[in-house]
Image (cartoon, rainbow, N blue to C red; front, side, top):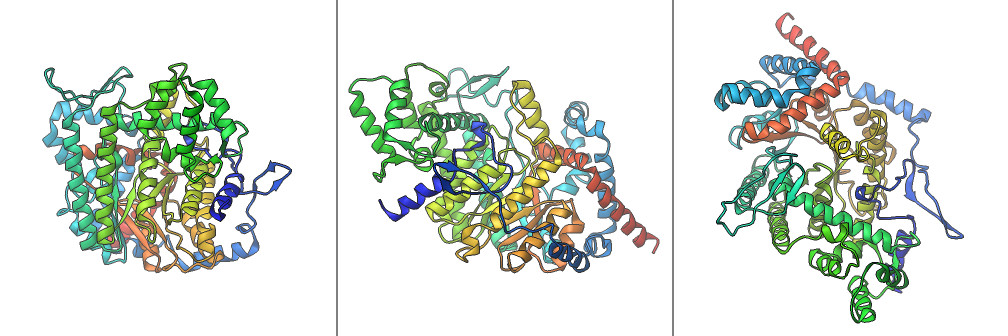
Length: 580
Protein backbone atom coordinates (compact mmCIF):
# COMPACT_ATOMS: atom_id res chain seq x y z
CA UNK A 1 0.00 0.00 0.00
CA UNK A 2 1.33 3.47 -0.94
CA UNK A 3 2.62 5.72 1.82
CA UNK A 4 -0.12 8.30 1.13
CA UNK A 5 -2.81 5.64 1.43
CA UNK A 6 -1.39 4.45 4.76
CA UNK A 7 -1.38 8.03 6.08
CA UNK A 8 -4.97 8.50 4.95
CA UNK A 9 -6.05 5.22 6.51
CA UNK A 10 -4.37 6.06 9.80
CA UNK A 11 -5.95 9.51 9.85
CA UNK A 12 -9.42 8.16 9.19
CA UNK A 13 -9.03 5.56 11.91
CA UNK A 14 -8.50 8.41 14.38
CA UNK A 15 -12.19 9.22 14.22
CA UNK A 16 -14.98 6.77 14.91
CA UNK A 17 -17.15 8.55 12.38
CA UNK A 18 -15.23 11.07 10.28
CA UNK A 19 -18.38 12.10 8.49
CA UNK A 20 -19.48 14.25 11.41
CA UNK A 21 -21.06 16.75 9.10
CA UNK A 22 -23.82 18.87 10.63
CA UNK A 23 -26.22 17.13 8.34
CA UNK A 24 -25.93 13.79 10.17
CA UNK A 25 -26.84 15.06 13.63
CA UNK A 26 -24.29 12.84 15.41
CA UNK A 27 -22.84 13.49 18.82
CA UNK A 28 -19.89 15.81 18.56
CA UNK A 29 -16.77 15.97 20.68
CA UNK A 30 -16.85 19.04 22.88
CA UNK A 31 -13.41 18.82 24.42
CA UNK A 32 -9.97 18.07 23.09
CA UNK A 33 -8.46 17.92 19.65
CA UNK A 34 -9.09 15.17 17.14
CA UNK A 35 -5.92 13.36 18.27
CA UNK A 36 -6.20 9.65 18.89
CA UNK A 37 -4.31 6.51 19.72
CA UNK A 38 -5.28 2.99 18.85
CA UNK A 39 -5.22 0.43 21.60
CA UNK A 40 -6.91 -2.95 20.97
CA UNK A 41 -9.27 -1.32 18.50
CA UNK A 42 -10.24 1.42 20.93
CA UNK A 43 -10.20 5.00 19.66
CA UNK A 44 -10.29 7.96 21.99
CA UNK A 45 -9.89 11.71 21.96
CA UNK A 46 -6.88 13.24 23.64
CA UNK A 47 -7.05 16.74 25.01
CA UNK A 48 -4.49 19.31 23.95
CA UNK A 49 -1.50 19.66 26.21
CA UNK A 50 -0.29 22.84 24.53
CA UNK A 51 -2.83 25.29 25.83
CA UNK A 52 -2.25 26.79 29.26
CA UNK A 53 -4.43 29.85 29.31
CA UNK A 54 -5.19 29.42 32.97
CA UNK A 55 -1.53 29.24 33.95
CA UNK A 56 0.19 32.03 35.78
CA UNK A 57 2.25 32.68 32.66
CA UNK A 58 -0.90 33.32 30.65
CA UNK A 59 -2.24 35.58 33.38
CA UNK A 60 0.96 37.58 33.24
CA UNK A 61 0.62 37.87 29.48
CA UNK A 62 -2.99 38.98 29.86
CA UNK A 63 -1.86 41.67 32.27
CA UNK A 64 0.87 42.69 29.84
CA UNK A 65 -1.66 42.77 27.01
CA UNK A 66 -3.91 45.17 28.89
CA UNK A 67 -0.94 47.50 29.29
CA UNK A 68 -0.02 47.30 25.60
CA UNK A 69 -3.46 47.83 24.08
CA UNK A 70 -5.89 50.25 25.63
CA UNK A 71 -9.13 49.21 23.99
CA UNK A 72 -11.04 51.61 26.20
CA UNK A 73 -9.24 54.71 24.87
CA UNK A 74 -11.99 56.43 22.86
CA UNK A 75 -9.68 59.20 21.75
CA UNK A 76 -7.61 56.66 19.78
CA UNK A 77 -10.51 54.47 18.69
CA UNK A 78 -12.61 57.26 17.24
CA UNK A 79 -9.97 59.74 16.10
CA UNK A 80 -10.81 59.32 12.39
CA UNK A 81 -14.57 59.49 12.91
CA UNK A 82 -16.42 62.79 12.80
CA UNK A 83 -18.57 63.93 15.70
CA UNK A 84 -21.70 63.52 13.56
CA UNK A 85 -20.71 59.87 12.90
CA UNK A 86 -20.29 59.30 16.64
CA UNK A 87 -23.70 60.81 17.37
CA UNK A 88 -25.30 58.64 14.68
CA UNK A 89 -23.63 55.53 16.16
CA UNK A 90 -24.89 56.48 19.62
CA UNK A 91 -28.46 56.87 18.34
CA UNK A 92 -28.41 53.66 16.26
CA UNK A 93 -27.12 51.57 19.17
CA UNK A 94 -29.79 53.01 21.44
CA UNK A 95 -32.49 52.09 18.92
CA UNK A 96 -31.09 48.55 18.86
CA UNK A 97 -31.68 48.45 22.60
CA UNK A 98 -35.46 48.54 22.14
CA UNK A 99 -36.23 44.84 21.99
CA UNK A 100 -39.79 45.22 20.70
CA UNK A 101 -38.69 47.41 17.79
CA UNK A 102 -35.90 45.01 16.83
CA UNK A 103 -38.06 41.88 17.12
CA UNK A 104 -40.70 43.43 14.87
CA UNK A 105 -38.32 45.31 12.56
CA UNK A 106 -39.20 43.24 9.49
CA UNK A 107 -42.94 43.86 9.88
CA UNK A 108 -42.36 47.54 10.67
CA UNK A 109 -40.28 47.97 7.53
CA UNK A 110 -42.84 46.18 5.36
CA UNK A 111 -45.61 48.33 6.82
CA UNK A 112 -43.55 51.48 6.21
CA UNK A 113 -43.00 50.49 2.57
CA UNK A 114 -46.74 50.01 2.08
CA UNK A 115 -47.69 53.27 3.80
CA UNK A 116 -44.89 55.66 2.78
CA UNK A 117 -43.44 54.04 -0.34
CA UNK A 118 -39.87 53.13 -1.22
CA UNK A 119 -38.63 56.68 -1.79
CA UNK A 120 -39.38 57.92 1.73
CA UNK A 121 -38.21 54.69 3.38
CA UNK A 122 -34.88 54.85 1.53
CA UNK A 123 -34.57 58.53 2.44
CA UNK A 124 -35.02 57.65 6.12
CA UNK A 125 -32.65 54.64 6.11
CA UNK A 126 -29.80 56.15 4.08
CA UNK A 127 -28.40 58.48 6.79
CA UNK A 128 -29.33 56.22 9.73
CA UNK A 129 -29.18 52.39 9.82
CA UNK A 130 -27.90 52.01 6.28
CA UNK A 131 -25.38 54.82 6.64
CA UNK A 132 -24.01 53.34 9.86
CA UNK A 133 -23.71 49.66 8.91
CA UNK A 134 -23.17 49.87 5.11
CA UNK A 135 -20.45 51.56 3.10
CA UNK A 136 -22.70 52.76 0.29
CA UNK A 137 -24.89 51.62 -2.57
CA UNK A 138 -22.10 51.02 -5.09
CA UNK A 139 -18.31 51.06 -5.39
CA UNK A 140 -18.23 54.79 -6.07
CA UNK A 141 -20.05 55.72 -2.86
CA UNK A 142 -17.97 53.37 -0.65
CA UNK A 143 -14.68 54.96 -1.74
CA UNK A 144 -14.60 57.58 1.07
CA UNK A 145 -15.10 54.85 3.68
CA UNK A 146 -12.25 52.75 2.26
CA UNK A 147 -9.89 55.73 2.20
CA UNK A 148 -10.77 56.74 5.74
CA UNK A 149 -9.95 53.23 7.00
CA UNK A 150 -6.66 53.11 5.10
CA UNK A 151 -5.48 56.21 6.95
CA UNK A 152 -5.71 54.20 10.18
CA UNK A 153 -3.96 51.13 8.80
CA UNK A 154 -7.21 49.19 8.44
CA UNK A 155 -7.94 47.07 5.39
CA UNK A 156 -11.26 46.48 3.74
CA UNK A 157 -13.39 43.42 3.04
CA UNK A 158 -15.85 44.40 0.33
CA UNK A 159 -19.16 42.60 0.60
CA UNK A 160 -22.15 42.93 -1.70
CA UNK A 161 -24.77 42.62 1.03
CA UNK A 162 -27.96 42.05 -0.98
CA UNK A 163 -29.15 38.51 -0.23
CA UNK A 164 -31.95 36.04 -0.73
CA UNK A 165 -33.69 33.55 1.54
CA UNK A 166 -36.28 30.83 1.17
CA UNK A 167 -39.52 31.85 2.88
CA UNK A 168 -42.38 29.59 3.81
CA UNK A 169 -45.05 31.22 1.67
CA UNK A 170 -42.99 33.08 -0.89
CA UNK A 171 -42.86 32.58 -4.64
CA UNK A 172 -39.26 32.89 -5.77
CA UNK A 173 -40.01 33.29 -9.47
CA UNK A 174 -42.66 32.32 -11.98
CA UNK A 175 -42.45 31.90 -15.74
CA UNK A 176 -45.35 32.49 -18.09
CA UNK A 177 -47.79 29.67 -18.67
CA UNK A 178 -46.70 29.11 -22.28
CA UNK A 179 -42.99 29.16 -21.48
CA UNK A 180 -40.91 26.01 -21.76
CA UNK A 181 -38.52 27.45 -19.16
CA UNK A 182 -38.86 25.69 -15.78
CA UNK A 183 -39.66 27.80 -12.72
CA UNK A 184 -39.28 27.46 -8.98
CA UNK A 185 -42.02 28.12 -6.47
CA UNK A 186 -42.59 27.34 -2.83
CA UNK A 187 -45.97 27.64 -1.17
CA UNK A 188 -46.93 26.35 2.27
CA UNK A 189 -43.67 24.34 2.33
CA UNK A 190 -44.64 22.43 -0.84
CA UNK A 191 -41.72 22.58 -3.24
CA UNK A 192 -42.22 22.65 -7.00
CA UNK A 193 -38.82 21.89 -8.46
CA UNK A 194 -38.80 24.44 -11.27
CA UNK A 195 -36.39 27.26 -12.08
CA UNK A 196 -36.53 30.25 -14.37
CA UNK A 197 -34.03 32.03 -16.55
CA UNK A 198 -35.14 35.24 -14.88
CA UNK A 199 -33.38 34.02 -11.75
CA UNK A 200 -30.39 32.85 -13.83
CA UNK A 201 -30.09 36.24 -15.50
CA UNK A 202 -30.01 37.92 -12.11
CA UNK A 203 -27.28 35.53 -10.95
CA UNK A 204 -25.23 36.37 -14.05
CA UNK A 205 -25.69 40.05 -13.24
CA UNK A 206 -24.50 39.42 -9.67
CA UNK A 207 -21.34 37.80 -11.04
CA UNK A 208 -20.52 41.06 -12.80
CA UNK A 209 -21.10 42.96 -9.54
CA UNK A 210 -18.73 40.63 -7.67
CA UNK A 211 -16.16 40.94 -10.47
CA UNK A 212 -16.28 44.71 -10.08
CA UNK A 213 -15.76 44.30 -6.32
CA UNK A 214 -12.77 41.99 -6.85
CA UNK A 215 -11.18 44.50 -9.22
CA UNK A 216 -11.94 47.26 -6.72
CA UNK A 217 -10.13 45.37 -3.94
CA UNK A 218 -7.15 44.97 -6.26
CA UNK A 219 -7.19 48.70 -6.99
CA UNK A 220 -8.08 50.38 -3.69
CA UNK A 221 -7.22 47.92 -0.91
CA UNK A 222 -4.79 45.34 -2.40
CA UNK A 223 -4.19 43.56 0.91
CA UNK A 224 -7.92 43.22 1.50
CA UNK A 225 -10.58 40.68 0.65
CA UNK A 226 -13.71 40.41 -1.42
CA UNK A 227 -16.69 38.63 0.15
CA UNK A 228 -18.89 36.35 -1.93
CA UNK A 229 -22.39 35.23 -1.05
CA UNK A 230 -23.36 31.99 -2.79
CA UNK A 231 -27.09 32.75 -2.60
CA UNK A 232 -26.36 35.54 -5.11
CA UNK A 233 -24.97 32.99 -7.59
CA UNK A 234 -27.88 30.54 -7.67
CA UNK A 235 -31.52 30.14 -6.77
CA UNK A 236 -31.86 29.67 -2.98
CA UNK A 237 -34.34 26.82 -3.45
CA UNK A 238 -31.83 25.04 -5.69
CA UNK A 239 -29.21 25.42 -2.94
CA UNK A 240 -31.60 23.91 -0.43
CA UNK A 241 -32.44 21.03 -2.80
CA UNK A 242 -28.76 20.36 -3.46
CA UNK A 243 -27.98 20.50 0.27
CA UNK A 244 -30.71 17.90 0.89
CA UNK A 245 -29.13 15.64 -1.74
CA UNK A 246 -25.70 16.03 -0.13
CA UNK A 247 -27.11 15.12 3.28
CA UNK A 248 -28.50 11.92 1.82
CA UNK A 249 -25.11 11.15 0.26
CA UNK A 250 -23.43 11.54 3.68
CA UNK A 251 -26.11 9.43 5.34
CA UNK A 252 -25.64 6.63 2.81
CA UNK A 253 -21.92 6.54 3.60
CA UNK A 254 -22.83 6.25 7.27
CA UNK A 255 -24.98 3.22 6.49
CA UNK A 256 -22.26 1.66 4.35
CA UNK A 257 -19.68 2.17 7.12
CA UNK A 258 -21.09 -0.62 9.27
CA UNK A 259 -18.29 -0.81 11.86
CA UNK A 260 -17.98 3.03 12.02
CA UNK A 261 -14.21 2.98 11.47
CA UNK A 262 -14.31 5.78 8.91
CA UNK A 263 -14.02 3.65 5.76
CA UNK A 264 -16.16 1.29 3.71
CA UNK A 265 -14.64 -2.07 2.78
CA UNK A 266 -15.79 -4.13 -0.20
CA UNK A 267 -17.53 -6.53 2.16
CA UNK A 268 -19.45 -3.72 3.88
CA UNK A 269 -20.31 -2.18 0.52
CA UNK A 270 -21.62 -5.50 -0.82
CA UNK A 271 -23.70 -6.35 2.25
CA UNK A 272 -25.40 -2.93 2.46
CA UNK A 273 -25.87 -2.80 -1.32
CA UNK A 274 -27.79 -6.08 -1.22
CA UNK A 275 -30.00 -4.67 1.55
CA UNK A 276 -30.83 -1.42 -0.24
CA UNK A 277 -30.57 -1.98 -3.98
CA UNK A 278 -31.80 -4.39 -6.66
CA UNK A 279 -30.79 -5.01 -10.25
CA UNK A 280 -29.72 -7.53 -12.88
CA UNK A 281 -26.11 -8.76 -12.98
CA UNK A 282 -25.78 -7.63 -9.36
CA UNK A 283 -22.21 -8.87 -8.89
CA UNK A 284 -20.99 -6.94 -11.94
CA UNK A 285 -22.77 -3.77 -10.84
CA UNK A 286 -21.38 -3.96 -7.30
CA UNK A 287 -17.82 -4.46 -8.57
CA UNK A 288 -18.19 -1.62 -11.04
CA UNK A 289 -19.61 0.74 -8.42
CA UNK A 290 -16.94 -0.07 -5.84
CA UNK A 291 -14.18 0.59 -8.38
CA UNK A 292 -15.76 3.96 -9.19
CA UNK A 293 -15.23 5.02 -5.57
CA UNK A 294 -11.97 3.15 -4.94
CA UNK A 295 -10.10 4.63 -7.91
CA UNK A 296 -6.66 3.94 -6.39
CA UNK A 297 -7.42 0.34 -5.56
CA UNK A 298 -6.84 0.77 -1.81
CA UNK A 299 -9.46 -1.80 -0.90
CA UNK A 300 -11.67 0.68 0.96
CA UNK A 301 -13.65 3.87 0.31
CA UNK A 302 -12.88 6.91 2.43
CA UNK A 303 -15.37 9.78 2.93
CA UNK A 304 -13.45 12.15 0.67
CA UNK A 305 -13.54 9.68 -2.24
CA UNK A 306 -17.22 9.02 -1.51
CA UNK A 307 -18.37 12.64 -1.54
CA UNK A 308 -16.26 13.64 -4.56
CA UNK A 309 -17.34 10.61 -6.63
CA UNK A 310 -21.04 10.44 -5.81
CA UNK A 311 -22.11 13.37 -8.01
CA UNK A 312 -25.73 14.08 -9.05
CA UNK A 313 -25.72 11.80 -12.17
CA UNK A 314 -24.33 8.84 -10.20
CA UNK A 315 -26.78 9.54 -7.38
CA UNK A 316 -29.65 9.39 -9.87
CA UNK A 317 -28.32 6.07 -11.20
CA UNK A 318 -28.12 4.64 -7.67
CA UNK A 319 -31.65 5.83 -6.94
CA UNK A 320 -32.83 3.75 -9.89
CA UNK A 321 -31.61 0.62 -8.09
CA UNK A 322 -33.33 1.47 -4.77
CA UNK A 323 -35.69 -1.20 -3.44
CA UNK A 324 -37.77 1.52 -1.80
CA UNK A 325 -38.19 5.08 -3.02
CA UNK A 326 -37.28 6.73 0.27
CA UNK A 327 -35.53 9.97 1.18
CA UNK A 328 -32.41 9.15 -0.89
CA UNK A 329 -34.38 8.68 -4.10
CA UNK A 330 -36.57 11.72 -3.37
CA UNK A 331 -33.49 13.92 -2.94
CA UNK A 332 -32.07 13.15 -6.39
CA UNK A 333 -31.63 16.24 -8.55
CA UNK A 334 -33.34 16.38 -11.91
CA UNK A 335 -31.32 16.88 -15.11
CA UNK A 336 -32.48 20.51 -15.21
CA UNK A 337 -31.30 21.01 -11.63
CA UNK A 338 -27.95 19.44 -12.44
CA UNK A 339 -27.46 21.95 -15.25
CA UNK A 340 -28.25 24.79 -12.86
CA UNK A 341 -25.81 23.43 -10.26
CA UNK A 342 -23.11 23.37 -12.92
CA UNK A 343 -23.97 26.96 -13.84
CA UNK A 344 -23.61 27.96 -10.18
CA UNK A 345 -20.25 26.17 -9.95
CA UNK A 346 -19.13 27.87 -13.15
CA UNK A 347 -20.05 31.32 -11.83
CA UNK A 348 -18.11 30.80 -8.61
CA UNK A 349 -15.09 29.38 -10.42
CA UNK A 350 -15.09 32.39 -12.75
CA UNK A 351 -14.92 34.70 -9.73
CA UNK A 352 -12.20 32.69 -7.98
CA UNK A 353 -10.11 32.52 -11.17
CA UNK A 354 -10.33 36.31 -11.53
CA UNK A 355 -9.37 36.80 -7.89
CA UNK A 356 -6.40 34.44 -8.30
CA UNK A 357 -5.21 36.35 -11.39
CA UNK A 358 -5.41 39.66 -9.48
CA UNK A 359 -3.94 38.20 -6.26
CA UNK A 360 -7.13 39.05 -4.34
CA UNK A 361 -8.37 36.79 -1.54
CA UNK A 362 -12.00 35.70 -1.43
CA UNK A 363 -14.14 34.98 1.60
CA UNK A 364 -17.14 32.76 0.92
CA UNK A 365 -19.77 33.69 3.48
CA UNK A 366 -21.55 31.06 5.55
CA UNK A 367 -25.33 31.24 5.33
CA UNK A 368 -28.35 29.34 6.70
CA UNK A 369 -27.78 25.71 7.70
CA UNK A 370 -30.21 24.49 5.03
CA UNK A 371 -27.91 26.00 2.36
CA UNK A 372 -24.59 25.18 4.03
CA UNK A 373 -23.89 21.63 2.72
CA UNK A 374 -24.01 22.93 -0.86
CA UNK A 375 -21.92 25.98 0.06
CA UNK A 376 -19.33 23.79 1.79
CA UNK A 377 -19.18 21.57 -1.28
CA UNK A 378 -18.55 24.58 -3.53
CA UNK A 379 -15.93 26.10 -1.23
CA UNK A 380 -13.97 22.86 -0.81
CA UNK A 381 -13.88 22.33 -4.58
CA UNK A 382 -12.49 25.86 -5.06
CA UNK A 383 -9.94 25.45 -2.27
CA UNK A 384 -8.70 22.17 -3.77
CA UNK A 385 -8.06 23.91 -7.07
CA UNK A 386 -6.86 27.38 -6.07
CA UNK A 387 -5.29 26.98 -2.61
CA UNK A 388 -2.41 24.76 -3.68
CA UNK A 389 0.24 27.36 -2.84
CA UNK A 390 -1.68 30.30 -1.42
CA UNK A 391 -4.69 31.33 0.68
CA UNK A 392 -6.90 32.45 -2.21
CA UNK A 393 -10.24 31.09 -0.94
CA UNK A 394 -11.46 31.31 2.68
CA UNK A 395 -14.07 29.01 4.22
CA UNK A 396 -16.38 30.48 6.91
CA UNK A 397 -17.27 28.60 10.11
CA UNK A 398 -20.18 29.79 12.28
CA UNK A 399 -19.21 28.86 15.83
CA UNK A 400 -22.69 29.16 17.31
CA UNK A 401 -23.52 25.87 15.56
CA UNK A 402 -23.14 22.74 17.65
CA UNK A 403 -21.24 20.93 14.90
CA UNK A 404 -18.87 23.80 14.04
CA UNK A 405 -15.70 22.36 15.58
CA UNK A 406 -16.20 18.94 14.05
CA UNK A 407 -16.75 20.37 10.57
CA UNK A 408 -13.72 22.63 10.87
CA UNK A 409 -11.54 19.69 11.90
CA UNK A 410 -12.77 17.61 8.99
CA UNK A 411 -11.98 20.42 6.54
CA UNK A 412 -8.47 20.82 8.00
CA UNK A 413 -7.92 17.08 7.66
CA UNK A 414 -9.06 17.18 4.03
CA UNK A 415 -6.64 20.02 3.28
CA UNK A 416 -3.74 18.13 4.81
CA UNK A 417 -4.56 14.86 3.04
CA UNK A 418 -5.11 16.54 -0.32
CA UNK A 419 -2.13 18.90 0.11
CA UNK A 420 -3.71 22.33 -0.18
CA UNK A 421 -3.72 25.32 2.18
CA UNK A 422 -6.62 25.61 4.55
CA UNK A 423 -7.90 29.15 5.02
CA UNK A 424 -10.84 30.07 7.23
CA UNK A 425 -12.76 32.92 8.76
CA UNK A 426 -14.43 32.16 12.09
CA UNK A 427 -17.55 34.00 13.20
CA UNK A 428 -20.06 33.41 15.94
CA UNK A 429 -23.01 33.49 13.55
CA UNK A 430 -25.68 35.80 12.21
CA UNK A 431 -28.83 33.73 11.60
CA UNK A 432 -29.71 32.63 15.11
CA UNK A 433 -33.33 33.82 15.13
CA UNK A 434 -34.14 32.33 11.73
CA UNK A 435 -32.41 29.03 12.52
CA UNK A 436 -34.19 28.55 15.83
CA UNK A 437 -37.59 29.53 14.44
CA UNK A 438 -37.19 27.13 11.54
CA UNK A 439 -36.06 24.23 13.76
CA UNK A 440 -39.00 24.80 16.12
CA UNK A 441 -41.56 24.91 13.32
CA UNK A 442 -40.16 21.73 11.74
CA UNK A 443 -39.82 19.87 15.04
CA UNK A 444 -36.06 19.53 14.59
CA UNK A 445 -33.20 19.84 17.05
CA UNK A 446 -31.99 23.40 17.59
CA UNK A 447 -28.67 23.61 15.69
CA UNK A 448 -27.47 26.50 17.88
CA UNK A 449 -25.49 26.12 21.10
CA UNK A 450 -27.75 26.34 24.15
CA UNK A 451 -25.77 29.13 25.83
CA UNK A 452 -23.57 32.01 24.75
CA UNK A 453 -20.85 30.52 26.96
CA UNK A 454 -20.86 27.36 24.81
CA UNK A 455 -20.51 29.51 21.70
CA UNK A 456 -17.57 31.43 23.23
CA UNK A 457 -15.91 28.14 24.18
CA UNK A 458 -16.39 26.71 20.69
CA UNK A 459 -15.02 29.88 19.11
CA UNK A 460 -11.81 29.82 21.11
CA UNK A 461 -11.35 26.05 20.65
CA UNK A 462 -11.62 26.35 16.87
CA UNK A 463 -9.26 29.30 16.95
CA UNK A 464 -6.60 27.22 18.69
CA UNK A 465 -7.27 24.18 16.50
CA UNK A 466 -6.44 26.30 13.44
CA UNK A 467 -3.40 28.03 14.95
CA UNK A 468 -1.93 24.80 16.35
CA UNK A 469 -2.48 22.57 13.31
CA UNK A 470 0.46 20.48 12.15
CA UNK A 471 1.27 22.30 8.90
CA UNK A 472 1.48 25.64 10.71
CA UNK A 473 3.64 24.40 13.57
CA UNK A 474 6.02 22.73 11.11
CA UNK A 475 6.28 25.94 9.05
CA UNK A 476 4.75 24.56 5.85
CA UNK A 477 2.04 27.21 5.71
CA UNK A 478 0.74 30.28 7.50
CA UNK A 479 -2.24 30.16 9.83
CA UNK A 480 -4.57 31.73 7.22
CA UNK A 481 -7.14 32.69 9.85
CA UNK A 482 -9.46 35.69 10.06
CA UNK A 483 -10.78 36.16 13.59
CA UNK A 484 -14.05 37.96 12.92
CA UNK A 485 -15.32 39.04 16.31
CA UNK A 486 -16.68 41.95 18.32
CA UNK A 487 -15.75 40.24 21.56
CA UNK A 488 -12.77 41.81 23.32
CA UNK A 489 -12.01 38.61 25.24
CA UNK A 490 -11.71 36.67 21.97
CA UNK A 491 -9.35 39.30 20.59
CA UNK A 492 -7.20 39.04 23.70
CA UNK A 493 -7.31 35.23 23.53
CA UNK A 494 -6.04 35.36 19.93
CA UNK A 495 -3.15 37.60 20.88
CA UNK A 496 -2.22 35.30 23.75
CA UNK A 497 -2.28 32.27 21.44
CA UNK A 498 -0.01 34.04 18.96
CA UNK A 499 2.45 34.64 21.80
CA UNK A 500 2.18 31.10 23.15
CA UNK A 501 2.82 29.53 19.76
CA UNK A 502 5.60 31.99 18.92
CA UNK A 503 3.88 33.59 15.91
CA UNK A 504 4.55 37.14 14.70
CA UNK A 505 1.57 39.49 14.66
CA UNK A 506 2.13 40.68 11.07
CA UNK A 507 3.62 37.54 9.48
CA UNK A 508 1.53 34.78 11.06
CA UNK A 509 -1.37 34.97 8.63
CA UNK A 510 -3.77 35.84 11.46
CA UNK A 511 -6.00 38.85 10.98
CA UNK A 512 -8.90 40.41 12.87
CA UNK A 513 -12.16 41.61 11.40
CA UNK A 514 -15.12 43.62 12.58
CA UNK A 515 -18.24 44.78 10.80
CA UNK A 516 -18.47 48.37 9.68
CA UNK A 517 -20.25 50.35 12.37
CA UNK A 518 -19.47 47.91 15.17
CA UNK A 519 -16.65 47.65 17.74
CA UNK A 520 -14.60 50.54 16.39
CA UNK A 521 -12.72 50.62 19.69
CA UNK A 522 -11.33 47.14 18.86
CA UNK A 523 -10.59 47.77 15.19
CA UNK A 524 -8.77 51.07 15.54
CA UNK A 525 -6.87 50.00 18.66
CA UNK A 526 -5.60 46.84 16.90
CA UNK A 527 -4.60 48.90 13.87
CA UNK A 528 -2.69 51.35 16.06
CA UNK A 529 -0.77 48.44 17.62
CA UNK A 530 0.42 46.84 14.40
CA UNK A 531 -2.01 43.94 14.00
CA UNK A 532 -3.62 43.07 10.69
CA UNK A 533 -7.22 44.18 11.00
CA UNK A 534 -10.06 44.69 8.55
CA UNK A 535 -13.49 46.23 8.41
CA UNK A 536 -16.23 44.29 6.66
CA UNK A 537 -17.73 46.86 4.28
CA UNK A 538 -21.20 45.82 3.07
CA UNK A 539 -22.68 47.67 0.13
CA UNK A 540 -25.62 47.37 -2.25
CA UNK A 541 -29.06 48.82 -3.01
CA UNK A 542 -30.73 49.94 0.22
CA UNK A 543 -33.88 47.82 -0.01
CA UNK A 544 -31.95 44.70 -1.03
CA UNK A 545 -29.74 45.13 2.04
CA UNK A 546 -32.70 45.12 4.44
CA UNK A 547 -32.18 41.48 5.59
CA UNK A 548 -28.59 42.36 6.44
CA UNK A 549 -29.64 45.49 8.36
CA UNK A 550 -32.26 43.55 10.32
CA UNK A 551 -29.65 40.98 11.38
CA UNK A 552 -27.32 43.76 12.51
CA UNK A 553 -30.09 45.26 14.62
CA UNK A 554 -30.89 41.85 16.14
CA UNK A 555 -27.23 41.12 16.80
CA UNK A 556 -26.75 44.42 18.60
CA UNK A 557 -29.91 43.83 20.59
CA UNK A 558 -28.70 40.36 21.62
CA UNK A 559 -25.27 41.69 22.60
CA UNK A 560 -26.34 44.84 24.42
CA UNK A 561 -23.84 44.06 27.18
CA UNK A 562 -20.85 44.68 24.93
CA UNK A 563 -22.73 47.34 22.97
CA UNK A 564 -23.50 49.07 26.27
CA UNK A 565 -19.76 49.28 26.88
CA UNK A 566 -19.29 50.87 23.46
CA UNK A 567 -22.19 53.25 24.12
CA UNK A 568 -20.40 54.48 27.21
CA UNK A 569 -17.21 55.07 25.20
CA UNK A 570 -19.16 56.93 22.51
CA UNK A 571 -20.89 59.15 25.06
CA UNK A 572 -17.58 59.91 26.77
CA UNK A 573 -15.87 60.84 23.48
CA UNK A 574 -18.81 62.98 22.32
CA UNK A 575 -18.73 64.88 25.62
CA UNK A 576 -14.95 65.31 25.35
CA UNK A 577 -15.24 66.82 21.88
CA UNK A 578 -18.22 69.04 22.60
CA UNK A 579 -17.41 70.15 26.14
CA UNK A 580 -13.68 69.49 26.44
